[in-house]
Amino acid sequence: MSSKCGGKSSVFIYKGGGEKRGIRALVKLHYKNKFFLFPDDSETLDKIKNDILLALEYSYRKCSEIGYAEEEMIKELHNVALVILGYCSKNDREVWENELNDFYIMMFRYALELGRKYDLGIVAELLVKSGLLEILSICIDQIQEYDYDPELVSGYLRDDSISDTDKHMLCFMTHKVCKSVKDIVKINIEELSEEELIVAIRTQYFEWNDKDRVNRRLLILLKDLSTREDMKEKYDSLVKDVINLHVEYALPISMYSEYMKSHPLYKMLYNPETVDYEKLDLKVFVNVKSQKIIKNAGKYGGYTLYKRIRDAYYKDMGIKFCEALNQILRIENYKYLYETERKTKKNRKNKI
Image (cartoon, rainbow, N blue to C red; front, side, top):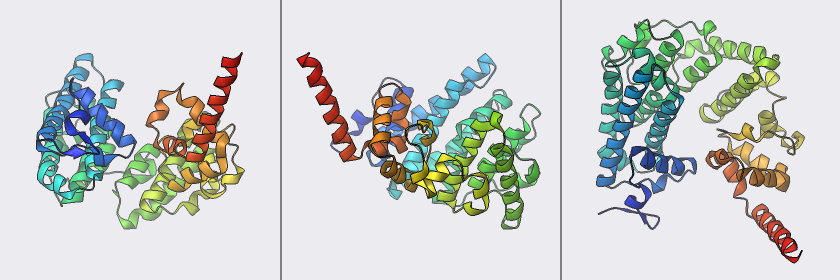
């Protein structure tokens, strides 16, 4: 018998029609932070596990056939990673330990072993860009200390078809559960890109005695990107990453403030009244995790910002998957004002 979740059965939540459709239904719940609705009865969990494995196998096979890591397949594996993370976020340790932990341990091994049958460069890119191995490592490590045989990863780290960047990322994403990877690849902190460094910090790859070098490298990257107009997108991404790390891992943000203080996210964190909410690019809220930023934006952006988001909601479906924007849209008094305005305009049109 299916368990009940918020009055809807697991079968309803995890609809049929192929693994993509079911997994995407859970991803929508993930973006809304409704992990409590993730089904946890054995029958549905077995189907979800099977669909996850099918998605992994299909992405490897398809990308090997076309000769590159297709963006759509990276996205599908990222969706799988979000479902796995969603179950880790679900406040039910019994489900993790009895239903999912063994599956996660098996899947980590299976993802790397199955990958050996295909182009290792393509497989590595799929696993790195989707974040699948990183999420699996986090979830496994949450339940128990685990250490895989180094041979599981070493074949990838020694393969010439895999870029140095992907090798670094594989080390960062697997070291929690495959500790010996640090002995296989030697990494120079001073040569890491902003993306590599952020993942290394997020996964706590470097030791305490490397702290000063890591901070110095991050400061250099921020300083360089903040002065280059051609690198605005990278700079925006790095600022967002630094703020998220500050929120999640207590990264000391004060030492980087000189090269972040003009950015709207930093302003919304510390000086929200100075932001121009009429011109603010709404994309700045994508993947923002700071509740302080979201609350300040709702408060100081007021109805002006709410209306911009609501108007854009009907034109850009991607907004539906941005939790920060969705939180602002849930502010009741702004919602009432907007609905009242719409009704007034509709009544005027009808009279004409």
